[in-house]
Image 1: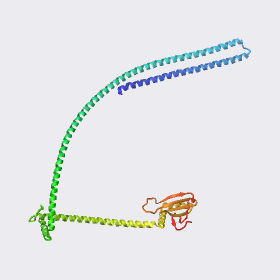
Image 2: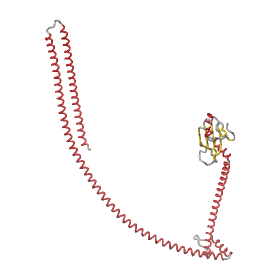
Image 3: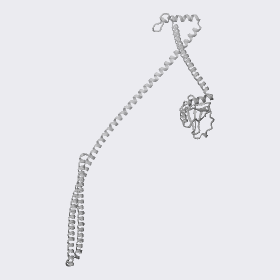
Amino acid sequence: MSDEARDPVSELEGQMKAAGMLIESLEEEVATLRQELGQARVALRAAQKEVAARERALEEHRQDTAELPAITDQSELEGRHKKEIQKLKALAEKRERELRRAQASRLKAAEEEFSKRLTSLKAQKDADNRALQERYTRELSRLRQEQEERFTQSEERRKAERRNLEERLRGAHLQREAELRIYNERLKELEGEKLRHKRAAEAEFDRRVERYTAEISSLEDRLAKLEDAPEIPRAKEIEPAAATADNESPAGRPDHEETGEAYENRNHLRDLEAKKVLAEERIQALENQLREAREENRRNAEKLHEALKELEKLSEPAKRLRAGISLFNASEHARGAASTLRVFGLPKVNVGLDGNTPVITLVWEDLGWRRYVSDPTEGIEEPRVYLTGTGDDPSEVNIAPNARMDARGNVSLGIQAR
């Protein structure tokens, strides 16, 4: 909502606050009038009490005067008392009527004033509401019109953008179709060119195969002729070729009287020498690898032999028991047993094999029993010493002590625990 629309609202809110304050003040005045009326009622009750007290006093005085000898006529005295009581009652009733009339008039005036003010405030409020409603209606219609204009403009702008996008899309489609046609034409050209190159390459390959086949056949014929020729002429033929190797031109052609056959033989010998050198290097590398593999195999065999020896040592029951006891004495369980000795004394100790695994059993008469596994096998995961059973009743286990434990918790074989 704009500032112009907010100002009448704030003004109306201020007027409503003022009307509320006026209503509160009128309510306070009404409460004050009611309080004064209550005070008048209290005063009337006090006057009534005073009249009653005076009546009681007159009655007492009448009784006192009745006893006096000098009193006059009794009827005269009673008449005077009655007149005085009537005067007091009339005075009290008059005062009460005056207070009621004053209170009623003030209350009526306050109510009339309150009604007038409330009527004026309601009329002003209705007028302000009508003005505000009219202003709000005008503002709402103006905002609705502006919103419709903006929406119309945005709709026209969106339609124009959509037309532009459609035109660009049609242009892109046309361009894509043109590029696709060009691409297909180029692809067909490339495929035709590839096919021509492939055919030319196949023809060239066939020609080279035929040529190499012919050369191989000629070389085989020459090699057969050389092998059938005498030994000396062959050597003489090779020696001039080797002698003239230093006289070649940079282009690789003979300079003097070297024939084409001798030149080809010399090149063939060079190729054979190069292949021989490569073969020797490859053989040397293979021999080195074989030597390294043999050395690695020898080291692995030695390690395996040592492991087998260690396994043979541990496979003996007595040696496995001693190894298990040594492992237990080096563990934290031995220190825990030593702390128990200070309270419950030395236990009965039995050391045996469960299959191939050393087992140590400790029995205290006052505490109970504990059983440990101590596996000396190399390569197993930790923990290698662990508690496998415990109980509070020593009679649950029936052992024959065959070892003992000292004050440090170390277990030793061969001596029965005491």
